[in-house]
Length: 327
Image (cartoon, rainbow, N blue to C red):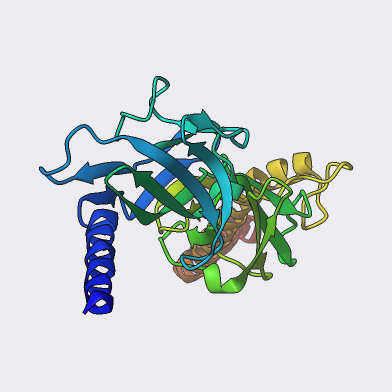
């Protein structure tokens, strides 16, 4: 009987300890937090107690950085029975006046880096029980203003060329897309190479190949963050063909000659047209004159014959008196 009574006592004590351990205290935190690179980030963690708990006191606080939700993690900020452990650089309680009576044990990261991205656990032990919560921090960094240039620097018509678009300083890994002046997507014709730098940020480089005979004169490069949001865009305009250093254009003619040749061609065409019209006019005039010359010739012949008859008549009358005298 005595042994059975001891067993009941131990069981009761264990039950009370179990209730005290988890029933009166609850640690609450946001499931996900967003932090911006180079700025402060706040990870909320607050201790909640039941109405039965009066004036609770915190004995232990442990903030740990985890590689996974199940990982034990590494301590970044700790408090143990009135003593604050030496925190890692850049980590501290959000309330600068925090003490063991303050149930807000939120963590402040003073200068957020890419390495701060990931899981965190907030574990609290009080005189009324203990609890733990896991939260995440998603670090974001905005991509820089885009830089767009051509390779080669001077694009020659009817030759292959490449447009290069670059952006850096972003996180997580984003993407670059290409559009022409009619909003057609040319991203499938490009190749993007992301590179993660020593600070964890990404540099994005995209190359768009332009084949000879391309008809578009404008291409727009757009950079998107990991969530699909547009962060910057820049348009590249392909310049028109430029004259060579010797003053020759793509046809081999000098610029001055090509400028003079155009009006000369117009003037020459006008002159040829006028000469052709004058030739037609002269041909018609000559034909008209031939047709009108026949009656004039007939009239002239008739006049000549009449004059000849008159002359013969006059000669015959002059000879008559001479003949009479001789007789």
